[in-house]
Every structure is written in structure tokens, then in C-alpha cells.
Length: 248
Image (cartoon, rainbow, N blue to C red; front, side, top):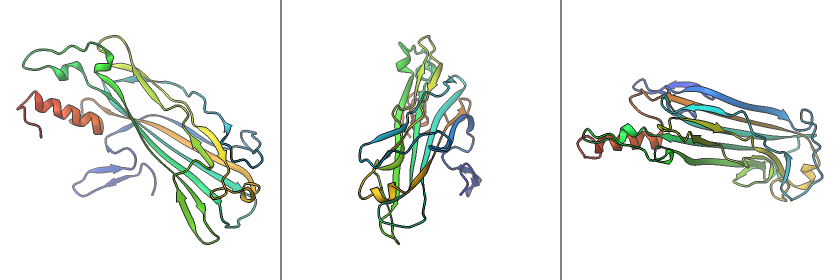
């Protein structure tokens, strides 16, 4: 399947992998695809079971956010793939490590809280803006034998790790509807283990291909549905509270 390929479901709805909403547009992306030895000049160390950073994650270019006009969500995905000097399928030989994450930023205008003709006032930016956590899924795929492939949720082998999670902040001036997104690249790491990447397979690694992509997606505030999961539900609750009072 091609990522971000639009698929038309029954009823004509557009479904796009990762984006969730078919009307979302890509505001900005940050990408990395390099070989740790050939491109970055890093020497793969001797076998060790100690968690080892081959390249530390550095801060990426910050992005301005316009909450008055858009709702945002940030997608992250990564892939680490060892390159070996042989093609032997053997026990405890890593094939790859994959990771996917999602970060959500929720802004609710003070006007949405007004009731029965009375306007609402936000005392601080924390009342209208918040970063809503992370959904993360990561798996290491490896040979359990010459004919069997297993996978596990472990931090071994060659893999990526977000040392600092992406964060967004709103300005401290009312109506708090602008902000900044800060992203730090993941650490590129390696760690040996007798069951996931053992010493004999480690010795045959000639390079490691590390890849990661951050994508900032946005949808207009003028849309009939505001934002993604949490924001869209909360706006709907406010509509119910300021309308009939019955939650639907």
C-alpha cells in the first residue's frame, strides 16, 4: 500500500492512511533517510548490550501554528534497517525496527464556551490550548530461526528513539490563538541482545539505514467538524451544552 494514497470508501468518503481525515492538508514535513556509516561517517561499535547512541537527535526547524485558522495533528514514523555482509537467515538477526506515533494539539476558542448570550473569557492559554499526549506503536522484526520470523516490542537492535517528544505552545497573549511547534529528531541507536541481535549477526553489519518522517497536517477551523478525535468530540459537547442541553 502506498502511504497517503487516497481510497474512496462506500458512500464516497475519502480515507487516507495516517491522516484520518480526507480533507486534511500537509502543512510541513521533516524527513531523514541516511546510512549511518556511509553518509554520517559513524563507526559501528563492537558488540555491546549497552544502549548506544550512534547519532543524537537534534532540534529541527520550529513551525508557527495558527489555531484561529487551523486544527493540527502531527504524525511520526521511523524505520531502522541493518545492512549485512551476508544474506544468511539466522537466529537473533534483526530485519528491521518500525515505529509510528501521533501527537494532537487542541485549541478551543473562548467564544465556544459562551452561553445564553454571555461571552466567555479565558483566564490563561492553558484554558484554551493543550497538547494531548502520544499514541505510539513500535516493533522489532527479527529471525527466530533460519525459517521463522518473530516480532516484539523491545528496544534492541538498531532502532530509533524519540528522546524529546514534539511539543507545541500557545502565545501568552489573549486570545492565545497562535503558537509554535518544536520538534527534536529521534536518537539513532543500537543495542545487542542474545535473542534479538546477537554478537555473530552484529559482527556482520556493514551499515544501518535510518529513516524518519514527521508530518504536520491541518484542517480548517471553518470545517463542519473541528480537528481530530478529542477536539471534535469536545466541540460537539459544547454545542450540545449550549443548545438543547442533551448530549448526543
